[in-house]
Image (tube, rainbow, N blue to C red):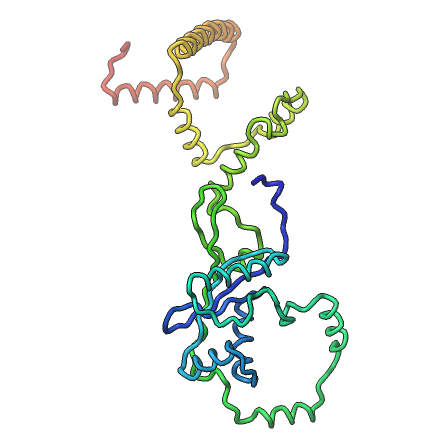
Length: 315
């Protein structure tokens, strides 16, 4: 898949509820926030008088002191969630899984953030600025005083907040949390796979600079941008290892040796010429007392070092 084809779009989750005792999958649903959806299921089963299969199953678990376990089955675009939910329910039932879903899936319901934008805006405008009176607060407090919370004594629901994905480069399976998937689109298991995919997508004719030669102005700009830039020790080690791994043919090695030998000869000839010019320029030039003192100290240190090394004069 080309990187240019990857565009961000809203995502939803297909989740499942497992029986903690038997470890069997019992219910499949869709939610934009699975953890919040599970809390809504538990609250409605506790406070609602509905008599559907899901509510009865949750009540039976809570009466035994247990709670369902939430797993994330698939992350899918919002526009495709109905088809994805129906596919999961159909495949699981064909495998013999005893689901308590009463429909083939894909119906949805306006709960939580599933309300349309227009409905949410009207509800917000109708409730904005509304303040509860003190009389209402006292009545609500008197109604709730002494009531035992429905989840008192129950353990928190076991929620697996990781989604299992497949890397499009190496095919490995890896996990990401829902918060990570909301921040960025994850298609690679690690940075190396992302770099390899980008390298393939920009190789050859796919590269925008394929067949183009940089102009002299661009070359000078690139050279100026690199002046003074120092590579880190890690980068130096990688460059050294890369150069050591290269194998040159014998003809290239001979050419490099001849070029280095010629360079050494040129440097030696230039050095002799420069030394002669310096000597001629300094010949007969008087030295100051400070200059003479520094030369004397330098000669003394040099002689003392040779004596420490056990060298005789003239060696």
